[in-house]
Amino acid sequence: MTKRALITGITGQDGSYLAEFLLDEGYEVVGMVRRSSTVTFERIAHLQDRIGTVHGDLLDQASLIDLLRTYRPTEVYNLAAQSFVQTSFGQPVLTGEITALGVTRLLDAIRIVDPDIRFYQASSSEMFGKVHEVPQNEDTPFHPRSPYGVAKVYGHWITVNYRESYGLHASSGMLFNHESPRRGLEFVTRKISHGAARIKLGLDRELRLGNLEAHRDWGFAGDYVKAMWMMLQQETPDDYVVAAGRTHSVREFCNVAFGHLGLNWEDHVVVDEQFFRPAEVDLLVGDATKARTVLGWKDSTTFEELVVMMVDADMDLLSGKLRPIS
Ligand code: NAP
Ligand code: F7E
Image (cartoon, rainbow, N blue to C red; front, side):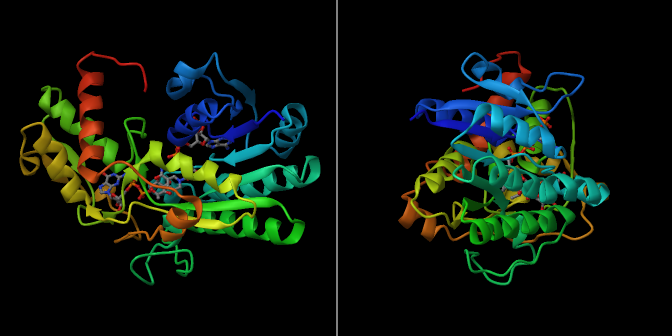
């Protein structure tokens, strides 16, 4: 039987890595993209002759039903979301429509068109928020700290609900922060790697950041998308934490990134109140024992390797040594 995967959010960081991985596994890959006035295919440009794209939007139920009927995927990976926490404070309703209700629209489309489709929901460590225990695992209570985190809790529970109500093979991956050279420029890791490279090349003098004390469990996105696929290969759907199991502060990230370029981060980083959040998630560190033992998932990248990979890629990008995405 042809293995055909539909990826929502294929133009995003994870979508591009997952598409590469599934193509290597022999899948036909179709990506759902939304209409925009400019092309947003930068991350998948190198895959364009190997994947299909179809227009649709998590805000538009009919488009989801239509594309499932047309493409008949065997697996659906729901990676689309308004995924930036800071934006969710300014646009809480839009975030809820896409990141929360969008999951129901897609699950219901699956229930109507083909309940045998296997479904992956991109849940988040932001659901743990103001953490009730350290480290966080599948049983840790949720306490989200942003409209984004709240929307993800809804997305998680509606996934569990469709599994329990309709018997769908629906799994939720509670992924901790994962980064790469393809990370959006607004997220702190890429902001630092790009900012440090600009300073090294004389394009900027300072980098303005918010809370340097926040701690995150950062891993490499290329490793994390494999866990998504592994969840859908299990006989039984379930929920898994996926994390590196180590935590570092934003300050430490700056130290390694600037240090790699022979710079002292304290000479360049300026703390700016505009990047602080109304409520912060202070400390995240995940316990991925279940994913490691049940799925056999493992990661391959240390914190230092991740930072250096991102800084080197931004140096190449900014100095004109454009490399094809790999
Ligand atoms: P990302 O780079 O921000 O990509 C988000 C994707 O969603 C983009 O392709 C975007 O399309 C699409 N999208 C946004 N609104 C949409 C809508 N209304 N209809 C259809 N598509 C829409 O995010 P990411 O880092 O790859 O993360 C992938 C998923 O994992 C997201 O759900 C995120 O919340 C979740 N997650 C991420 C992390 C992490 O550390 N990266 C951790 C846990 C969970 P455009 O290109 O058109 O904007
Ligand atoms: O912030 C602090 C900020 O925006 C990380 C998304 O993929 O991961 C991501 O959410 C930390 C926060 O990611 C700046 O306050 C300091 O404590 O890179 P971020 P995030 O909020 O952790 C989770 C798992 C997801 O699910 C999300 O989709 O860094 N911070 N100064 C800053 N953050 C930003 N963006 N910009 C700063 O200047």
